[in-house]
Length: 386
Image 1 (cartoon, rainbow, N blue to C red):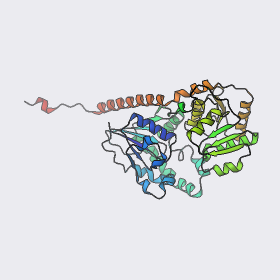
Image 2: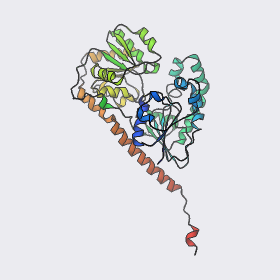
Image 3: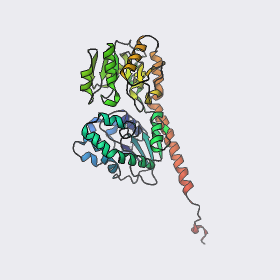
Image 4: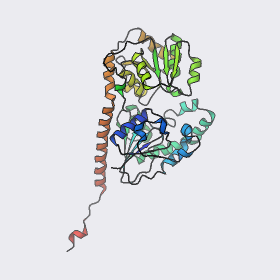
């Protein structure tokens, strides 16, 4: 089969791009279509494929301001010529699934989430955006929602990255989906010799420093309680977080994989105060043998079990996180590193590939069956000719 993979944009290596890499393992000859492509920001595994960009790539400062061009992306998606492709797999978080595919092509969407800035997190984005972005959201979000819901009809089958996202797909698109959790490189975080380092006296936050990730809760809670916190990551909220941080909070900025692995294995626990579609970072912490203290909502409920692999706090505020930290300190809960690592194994890349392979096979079978059902019965007049 000729396969086209549609990915919203290729400007970094985050969870969505790791899924794309895993899909490329399944389809090593696939072509990639994306709005914006920054070659040096993605892995060699992605760069070796034929990559086609939309006209968004040619717009001013697209590599950094790509999200500002969101209202143009539906039109840009529809300009691609996908004739000749048998299978189209869209990777949806930003606009990707709305491509116009040939009638005979099978279109499968792996949905990380319906676009959160026009659906579930619309009000949060309005509250934290600048004046121009707020104005654009108010002007264009209504039409984007209409297009997004309508374009879901262009997809033959949906896969969701979590049960959390499957519920969103059902609510916003009216479609069912199959849950296939994203691949997490758990082996990269497990101690190679099976010997877990003793935890050191600090908590850890890992992630982008953006408003919806709620790193501010981790910073404020550790400042209030005088607990040591190491923050790994960068983003637009970095300066604000540094201003509110006390002397026990330190910022490492963006770091490489070795630095991250080292501190994942040695922190007392990972703090995860945001609400995520799934949440890869908590699984990485579990693989490293460290418990997770997380806001008990969203995709983290599918990886962290309260009292067994972490502590879930009920309200997304500083007081609730402080209480969770005090419960952790009290010795009320006991966490065994090897058991935490075992809990992470069900999200290994091998599991993703197996489930995705089975899902694709079922979709192809169902598509072929539907095609035969639609084919009318007719006789060939040439068979009756003498």
